[in-house]
Length: 252
Ligand SMILES: Nc1ncnc2c1ncn2[C@@H]1O[C@H](COP(=O)(O)OP(=O)(O)O)[C@@H](O)[C@H]1O
Ligand SMILES: [Mg+2]
Image (cartoon, rainbow, N blue to C red; front, top):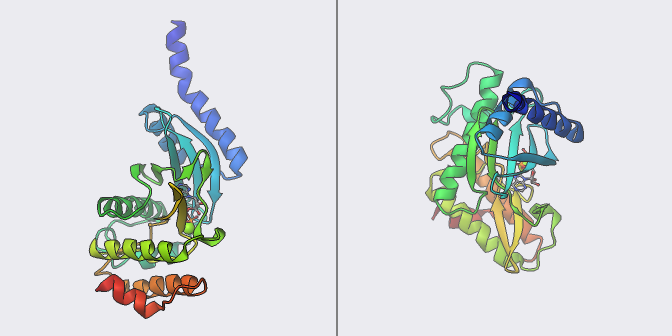
């Protein structure tokens, strides 16, 4: 009898844990989000949410632990603070998703589903992205990119020892994405992590919710912007390049 009671009480303990996380991160998780997280815990997708890595406008990112002790990143998209008009620009015209939206909540859920689908597509195409694990409603679970418990820094925050090598790897990833018929559409030094793998700097693309298929009406415009951002960053760091060179390489 006592056991049954304690078993039934388990979800409450998890909710308490999540409330504690809320306090640390200063972000309010709504009831629906909490129920998704409890569902992930009950279904052994995650064991615990550990600490927040980043709190942006659209999303809060947490480091989490899997039941087998693996490191995960959990992205929670926020219904209240999202910039819906911006988001619509990247959904309307992407035929995978633009029929699915009738209200704000659906929009945020589609945003999460879109990021998950884009991650899967990139991962399958051999683009270095965090391995996608699971998504439900407004929450995505993926590989935590980092060494030990430290999240990998974004390109904007590191001083590269091999700019030319990282540049070439980024162009390779952009080309693979293009061949998989996707454009990142927000590619810059702010959405590329630089992971040290065996002392080699490895760029990892993140933040893929706004990535669109090639037949999106603005795909070319988005790709040109991505190419320009990458060229601008690397030409300041001694790499001979410009936006057109990057664009030509990626689309050739
Ligand atoms: N899989 C991951 N592993 C480690 N850190 C991550 C991961 N995904 C995101 N982050 C961290 O969270 C930050 C925000 O993630 P991002 O997807 O760019 O969301 P947004 O820019 O919309 O807030 C990143 O700059 C990075 O520091
Ligand atoms: Mg970002």
